[in-house]
Image (spheres, rainbow, N blue to C red):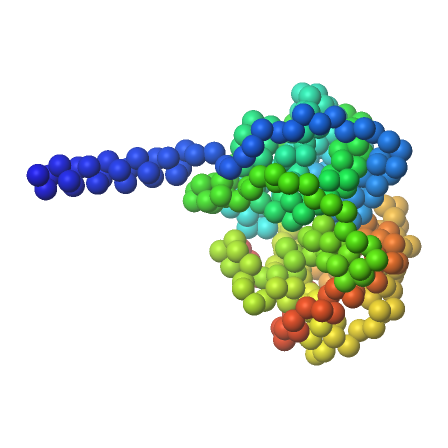
Length: 325
């Protein structure tokens, strides 16, 4: 009798383990919506893609030899492979999202694009690696996601074969729990509520993702926005800044104008006059896009950041010596 119990228990454990490994992410069928492509939506989508959400930063080939790693001419939406020095779990390759029908989004429906952006589920039902900030984009308003789709449809096709993302075990199994269906409408943020609107902008820009130190792939609780997360590419490394309102180590002593000026200081840069990228100036902060954030939005972002819990965390953003992997 005991033998049957043991065999039955082992069978159940093995069965559950097999299901856990082989299961797909939580998902619902993509909507059948066909987004109306108005001039207003295309313009808003362009702003989201290039500036606020910085979609181009991950989904385009970039010139890592120049400050800010600008997008290479003709490679917008081509997809890319993250440098191995970033220490990601496997080969992480944001795909081609141009209108190429074989390699990009040309044959995707609008609903499939929306599901990928806000829910993290690809056209074939796979869970997307959560470096794609779909957990933040789940809060993207319906109108903004429609605008993003409208703009994506205007992007030219780029013939670029990107290798498939291959995530190492056990992350490839655990990340299947990340996608969550968005089953209700998401309204527009109230722009008259400066702090609430600032929170929306911070969420869409993914500020918490880069400005919170991670441990085993998860943000360290209690250290939100306190910086210290490291980013590497080739022989360069940068640590994200503390943007909590701590007076000594964050932005607590900053006023609104200093915050705005920090972004405007990059407004004279373009692809032709960018300095070389070296250890002293290496950055993954998308200054080349963020320099175009409207002043009222920068002020809203600042207002929201000032409401955060001050966290004392001194960060040396550019260590003189880059430690070896």
